[in-house]
Image 1: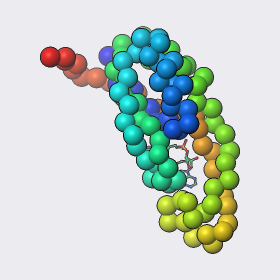
Image 2: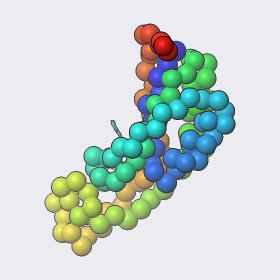
Image 3: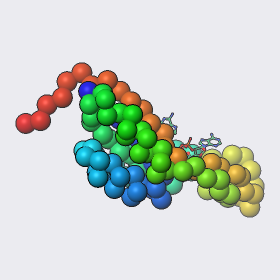
Image 4: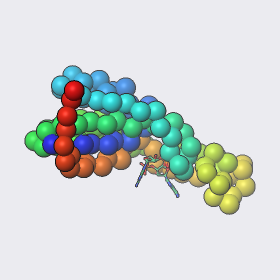
Length: 108
Ligand code: 2BA
């Protein structure tokens, strides 16, 4: 069994959640915040069988597209040493995913 921890952009999280649930995955959703943009994102915790990991990754990939956004430097942690009026280009969206081995799984 594996534990998938997936950090997803807030704007994509509804589609990801719907698609995962429709495919029968059990999903726990946490409201989280990125350390750099300090914007809300969503972290999904998904416990699943080894042979279902690839399909879950596929669903996340299909439903969370990367895109470029211009962000005011002042909106980033520390402001990157730039004047607050300056903007920087940041890639947002997509998914950051960790897949871990589960040593033991119990439901009481
Ligand atoms: P944030 O830390 O808010 O980062 C949002 C996006 O800003 C990142 O997208 C990246 O494109 C950019 N970025 C982050 N740190 C940067 C820096 N020091 N300089 C310039 N640009 C920077 P992603 O890499 O797709 O990450 C999206 C979110 O996933 C992150 O939000 C963070 O919450 C999480 N994340 C990413 N990598 C992680 C990791 N190795 N461990 C834990 N969480 C991670």
